[in-house]
Picture 1 (tube, protein in one colour):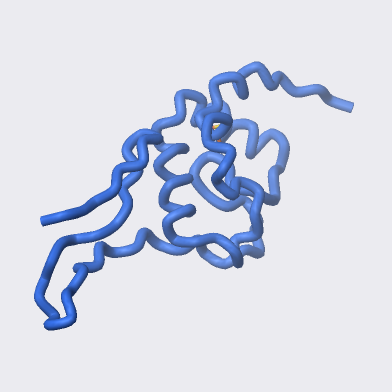
Picture 2 (picture 1 turned 180 degrees about the vertical axis):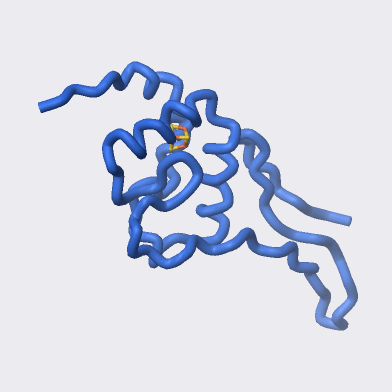
Length: 111
Ligand code: SF4
């Protein structure tokens, strides 16, 4: 049995985001979760180590290095578009949505 160096995992950005569905079947994955995990991976300091591990370990499940690694999974949902909020009279009030900026949840809001 081959052992693999896993010390790089100490720098894994996903460790600070346990609320995200890193190991969830993509049929249950929301577009926001997929986009947030992509964002976390994009800024992860050990992204290249993670990608190397995916290849070395022949990973076939879970979200690793920016994408779902299940070869049979449907494509992860694309990022949702911003949706304008409207009043009962259909007047534009504000843009609503949630941005994730480096792990900080920022609520988009009032005009
Ligand atoms: S690249 Fe993504 S999945 Fe890999 S360690 Fe970093 S945050 Fe976790």
